[in-house]
Length: 544
Image (cartoon, rainbow, N blue to C red; front, side, top):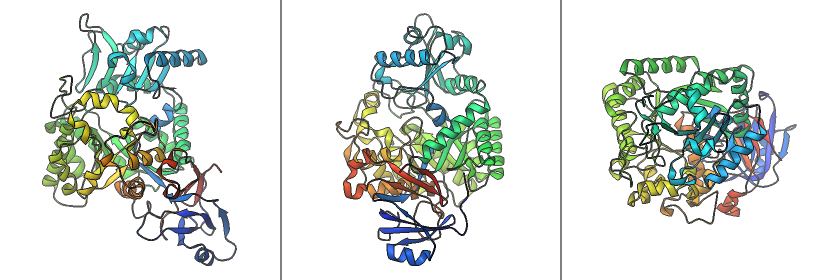
């Protein structure tokens, strides 16, 4: 990526400007070097820019602050772009057909890799190896679920993983087994996936492959108006790829990273991981790449009946959390004492309560000081715990795209009661004074922020707009949704003084949409596209 020239001045005009601030909408921007010099009227922009400024005509549409994806997975997003895509596969037959087509088109690939399948597309929601063996018996098949909390494999994959009926389930994970024979059926979830399957596959990837995945993700983000991301599961391979990209100038998107905390082990091992994260945070503090904190995954997902709930699922399941309070609290307190930003994945109400209790205990132990701790997802929260978010100053990091009605049938069926009417209660969290930051959780969902905005503002489906809205009382005004995806997302990673608002002196980070949803209506977001992305005064994407 090139660097902005300190003395170069550019006027961007010809489109409405949503500044994200309390000031009126603007008509033009003036950029000098990597900063905004002027945001306001067209006439004042020309005076501020002075003679010799370059003029870029935008041909209508809307300029918005650069999107900050407050929760994503960089390398996984790039990797997903190369796999069999199954998110829109409605049934087993379609899944099998796509796997067979991909295998035929890639005869030299040692494994068939896919992502995005939904439980609702599988008979009885129970994926088995036999279903995959029927279409691909000769090569290992690995299919990550839509939520990336489980993987579906065939018999060849089980063989090379060394998983047999005698393989023990790790803490917080399950290897599904036939109830009669005890043999593994081909469905592996939570820590059984992250401790067994993912490391096996990671060890077989090359740095060149990781670099390609990284570059693919950067291109995808930039072409969608994203100028910053928070990577919520950085490991040694991902960080090394980021370091290589930074060294070679291939960082068009600013990255803030959270070190992934492995659950297995005892408190001493968890504290050692915290120490590693603290060291990395000291070593990586550049404007383009910064390690900020740690990420804990306290529970799973509602679709797979692995999220921790205070009341059982409709089928009677009552899974235990991956991190209980007694295990989580010491590690959280140590991370807080080290000055790290803590992010906690908590989807079910029991997991949210565990997260809140641990974060509150850390404050009690370490004393009052500025903090920016976060809870990720919060799909179902007990009403009694909602006020605690604001009182503790917790950022509610959420992904509207997960509330898309097209992927909610199984989610709602698993809860099966009035809890479904309290799913994804974004306005309630914001009303407590908690900061609400929007991301996409790509690749568990599409990485386009425009889909996020549409769903946030309508509670309708970006995949099938004909579907009825999902609890429409939780829809947000479009301007609020935009701020949650820009300023509040920047605030969530302590970047609000530089990004998220278009005002003089801030970084020139912005995106240009080909239409203005404030004029054309929210539905226009379904057809809208990003025509230009500018980060630090440099065009990182131009699709006009």
